[in-house]
Image: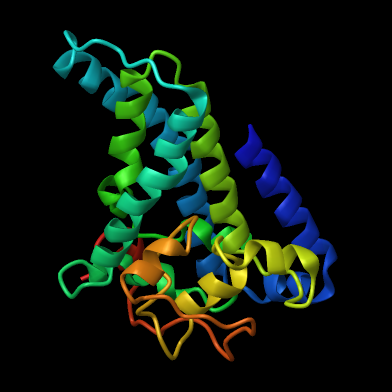
Length: 240
């Protein structure tokens, strides 16, 4: 519920912003189609798949395993911190020569807006760690409530960091969040035309700092996105 609320708020704020509205109407038909299909796939179909097929798979494979009772803080931390570290490496692998062709569509985004969050070749979603890890912990935990809160917060932040809604570097909230949380400015540099080899984390900056992939700038890059010659079919299904 939190994710859909954040999506609607971010979309609304983008539309009422003059520059954001202009960017929306300049999006090509193909970009609208790819973004819309991606949002439906990752926002609706993948969660359904997680809680049906994948969850029941673990239910079958781990039927004799005793459920784990964790303190809410620890359950939340596994979701928001531990899984975030798994995602860091998952994302970084997508930038290797072996998997880049599956991820390149996401980097054709030329403007930061919430609609481009899920722009991906469709079956890339099956290689993203969230699909497999979240149902596992939801199955294993006696009470997965706070784990799910962490999942929802991560998803909401994912939408925000792909948006153009930023805080001024001089603002109090920017100074409080910037030292540890990945902000839209940080992720914009991940999508910069000039450099796409850093800022791989989803929630926390610590992983990029630990592994030397952090790029720090309070400004936004001059241009975003890469150019490809992929057809619509290639973008959605076979990006070879």
